[in-house]
Length: 286
Picture 1 (cartoon, rainbow, N blue to C red):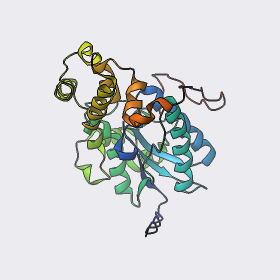
Picture 2 (picture 1 turned 90 degrees about the vertical axis):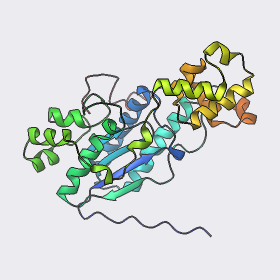
Picture 3 (picture 1 turned 90 degrees about the horizontal axis):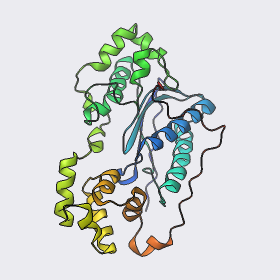
Picture 4 (picture 1 turned 120 degrees about the vertical axis):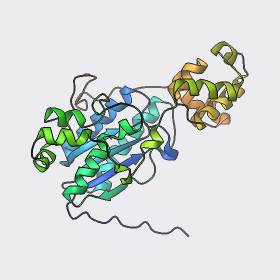
């Protein structure tokens, strides 16, 4: 018998730390185009819902947000965000089925001290995952908005007031800490170094080059691709090491072999003109 889900406790401050995670911890972002599309969805939903977003970070297989809802519930907000992105992502990568874990995780942020802790934890997620050496070099987070004092998506004023100014806040966000007691998923986003990825590829396939891999039987190549992905290689790494297009790699990972030929041709559709809030501008401060 299925047990009913426990109702979420309402935060006394109405502020929540929320995490969206890929089902089975799989990647939900493969390249910057995916991250940009998610930011357009986030900005669009923020504009329509009226929620405040105090911090966010986009990792490869999960997203962290520090959010204060307005008129809509968290469930409504993230059902809309998750559904819109999953439809687009599945179409782009010829994928079927759920993209996100069925229910997002959330925790209440009910004090100024814990708000500060969660804010820094979210900002430093890429650094702790080995993606950057200091906050700011990875652009898919709110750090630069706080460093500049404002952003296009991030609502910075509450934190600036809490810290008494930008300098104190930025110094705090750069401090070394032991904030891993917060909902920790950074370790799940660690990418294998290229040398280790090559070593795993050779061990699994007994091939040391793209040309050797291409000589393998098609069904065996697909089996090896699934094994490499299971051991932590990203789609991009597998594509580079095997010479297979990324969409083909994704199809091999996601679709059972007996269904591989039943997929519809890839048809990517650009978002409607009124949907696009942000373009691929490296100078955008989120």
